[in-house]
Length: 143
Length: 143
DNA sequence: GCTATTATTTAGAATAATTCTAAGTCTCAT
DNA sequence: ATGAGACTTAGAATTATTCTAAATAATAGC
Image 1 (cartoon, rainbow over the protein chains, first blue to last red):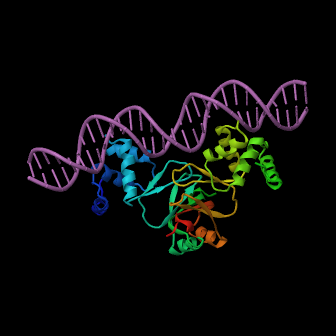
Image 2 (image 1 turned 90 degrees about the vertical axis):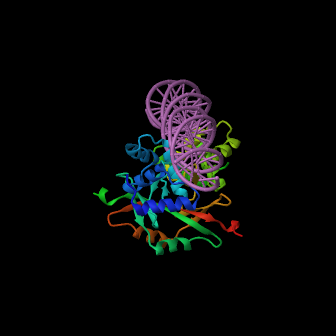
Image 3 (image 1 turned 30 degrees about the vertical axis):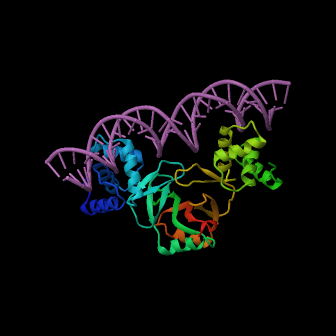
């Protein structure tokens, strides 16, 4: 429930930079995401947030998550039509979805890998972002 | 509206292989996707399908699309939380979403690019599929 | 520190894509 | 032809998310 000072500072700075206020709720949602980095859905974040802040509403969870995404403090992760998940890892990475355990694992990507993908683009195309989602079996789920 | 014989044969074979029947509706939905390869949503497929087959229902469009996906005759394409789109291009490719024009363009990927991504996986992970979505500006949308 | 202004939170209603249900229709093997 | 199972259909149901309007909280200026 406690947001480490470095993260609190990062949050405040990012919010101020975009002309938004730092609130108890935003702080708490950010801390929930940092505490257990397992790519929870909004509902899961809501459940976790409520244990320390029982009066928080689901709409607020959605609002806070949206604000955090807009200010680039967290990322959204989508798999097919499943509920959106949230991720505080801001490094260049892809996501691996294990069909067996349902776990989502961050896969760090080298600059070289991104380079290769950028080079695949036809002339005149410029990409702001590449979303990469693997699916298969993770190390814990093999025979 | 007419399904070229080679595609008709491919459809029939794939359906038979999975113990399903070849129907007018499935054939028609497949032909709609092949005719204009612009990654339509289910609603758009429905609108197009109705002009030649006015009695087809939206539920059937969803059912047929699902069947075609299951039998690997088409692919689903998802961007964030937007409606699912459908794509009859079965080659190894990624999708580029232009924020400006809203267009979705297929990006062919070399074996090398896929290789590089596969090598990024930690030991013990095996991927069945990699979904790659770029977003940015396409060639027609640059200054 | 107070107060006004503006942003944020809240509960519940609304939305939209998709799935489900149950009845009717078609297909195909016998 | 007939019956069993597969498919289609319309409309209801579901579900993640967004919207709405009122209540509350944060900040700037005094």
